[in-house]
Length: 306
Ligand code: RUB
Image (cartoon, rainbow, N blue to C red; front, side, top):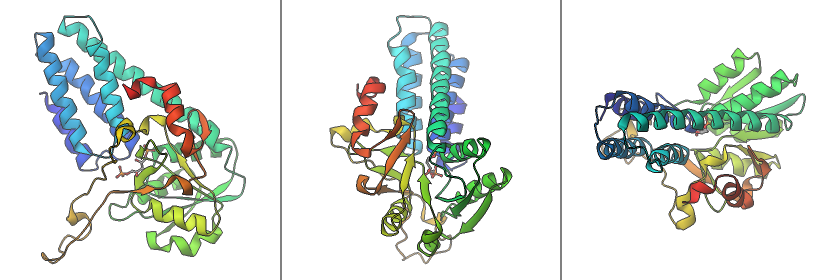
């Protein structure tokens, strides 16, 4: 196993790479490095290295179907190839990884085009955590001349809301920052809630940063539209076959470093927002209902189901 896969997996585990999209890109870039540096002489040995890399990357964060779909697809291109020489197979990994990244970029662009139309001039937008897909969509709306304000939650315990707040300020957007538990107090000021996704299940439920489900309930109470902004490839095909999406539980130290030892501290990284609380999923195919998302994925990315 080459070093970079270990290093990348560790960086993902430590949240040094954050957000589903960045995690997926880092993982397939690590495969590119592996392909470049491999000492394997035979196809079988190279395939074993890829398989070990996959195991390591999958274990780095368990609620990341985009990463799993990306890694599976890149490796499948080698599995399907008739090439025998490791040099040729390594080239297949590099070109497949780059192709996947290009298609993710195209999806991000399309999502931003579609989603930015939902941002009305003068509106107040609430977001949670840090989603690069959400912030890109907001930057697109800004470029189109739309004026809006953003409210960010701080997103305990790892404070990813600070990344969003800084990014919005750097774009010159008027930004308000609050603790997560203040969301209900400000919901009446909000016109639209947009959040990212880590996983979309076959039933159209969405897994995203812990606290997202609470915001969705509050949005329903205040009758405010609640949208998910996400690439379709965050769909987890395992959920179609009955698996529950696993919710990563992180170290108690992130919540309280010097907590009394006998205290039971829980730190789930994500929660599930039921589809009935979601107005729509803004994805590269348009704004789709959570109920129809599995069919749309099936139409656009049939390989996900293999
Ligand atoms: C990040 C998070 C983001 C999604 C979507 O959690 O929940 O909303 O990953 O992000 P963490 P993106 O900080 O624990 O990774 O749109 O960038 O894929």
